[in-house]
Image (cartoon, rainbow, N blue to C red; front, side, top):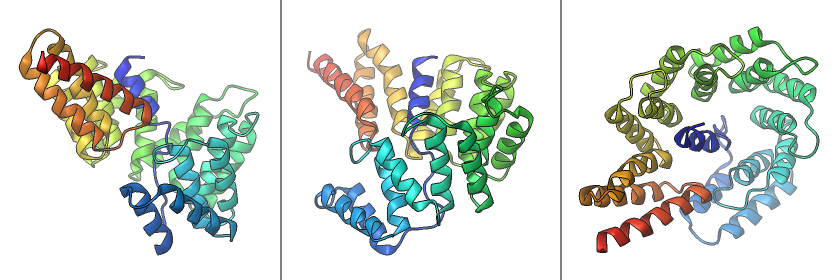
Length: 295
């Protein structure tokens, strides 16, 4: 997989969508303080943990997301799954996240049959966004694992058509890579395009990389930059990083204008609080570029 596509895939391993129903106002305030850096993050985390201990499923759900994202605290997938399980009795999306825990074997051995049953429960509870999680599992499954590619493709198509951008991105990447379905870059582009036009940053990232790499479309760096910029505008630091990476190549060849522009885009990427690994790469590139500028 090409570096840009790999970076997008890594970014998408984090939870793709937040809760459907808003948490309580007290929890919303704690989350806002965590994300803005107001006060000590650990204090707010402890507050949410106390609420979860008292049976607040909305707190448990948010703790699951925070610990699986690894954006504001350490990544702790096992503990995240415990919180998702706690919230799953009342929160359909927590049930869906619990399905992912079983599918990935986060807390032990993978159990795909239990994952399917858990996804089915989430959908029955009203979590339509879980359709393509179940669909992808059924598409990729090979007997004796749960397998029903036709139903899986139908579930993902239904979710994407209903405006679920995460589902659209998931099924489009399958078509792009021939992952469990017949490879169809044209169909992938069509789905990415619709989701990107509707404001989805992940779809814009993929669309940019299709143009940047010439995957199923004519290679077009200008179009790639356009879509990466759109992705950045919709909260994706990878968009700014990919633009900067392209400029970095020119900068290393002595293009001084590209040096300044690359620095600007890397600095923009940092404003979106990228994942720790991406932050380290960006900061390393900035050090190198600033030496080129001063040199």
